[in-house]
Figure 1: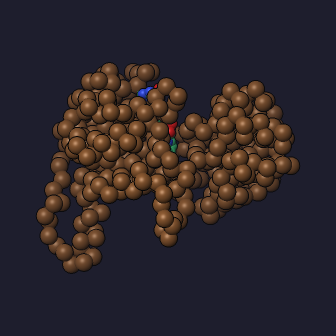
Figure 2: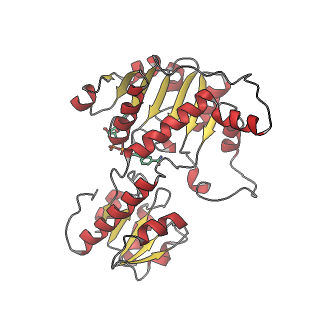
Figure 3: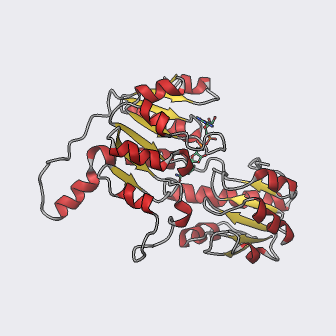
Length: 327
Ligand code: NAI
């Protein structure tokens, strides 16, 4: 099949080329959006990533251009209008769980960096500043960790955090015995918010949970709470979060995702004037760490993404189901 692969970086090409077989992959660095959708003329399928746009208008144009299949190189699919794709007769598949550990371990990296301030210590020591002033951390051992979403990544995160000797409380509309057997207490959201020292988001972004963390939920949290978001930017009301940081309700913020990330992430903008004042304000806090959606970014995950993407394409080409279809 002829496949237009959008938002490709050198590492995407490297890992996809290793496994592409007979598939004819054409790589575009550009995101899929209203300006680039015409590049898909003459293709059978598109392969997209987290910030490619697949709303109803774009899906309409994909259909006109003859696209029959959309395959995502990621687990989350909030950027695709599944209903519109179904109505257009376009099948959509994803990579459901390429490496839950990759994202869970990144969430832990954010926690430990914010806590023990290793990023600041590194810079200090580079300048022969061996002072410990203002580097005080806290023991994770004995703390209560609130996990929102106990699917693949939530469970991998729980396994690691259990090792620290923590109490884990969790909220998920679909609680499972498997997670209970890990020693996790399912609670309602209010209890989770009010009892957790660290809250980590591991649920998908849906229309219903947009701004799940807002001024009301922040008000219910413990003072000086640590908030970690490696899921999707839209789960967090960024303006309310900034207010929470200013009032010192939120003591630490670690995010791998950002509401407006599609305009910023995966690009080198170091010589550009950033017009997004919200991200500039966020970056001004000493207790905020942001990474640019790199939770997935391990060799193991990239290998798995490439393999499953190829399996999805081959299954579609053969008129079979890979099991990763979502519409
Ligand atoms: P999953 O589908 O295995 O688990 C998601 C869990 O969230 C399910 O148990 C579901 O019942 C629960 N859930 C749904 N709505 C909820 C709500 N409103 N409140 C609490 N729980 C809710 O998904 P997985 O693989 O664990 O991934 C979770 C999310 O992580 C993805 O949807 C994606 O947004 C994000 N992600 C981020 C990556 C990164 O690089 N930062 C990479 C991969 C995924």
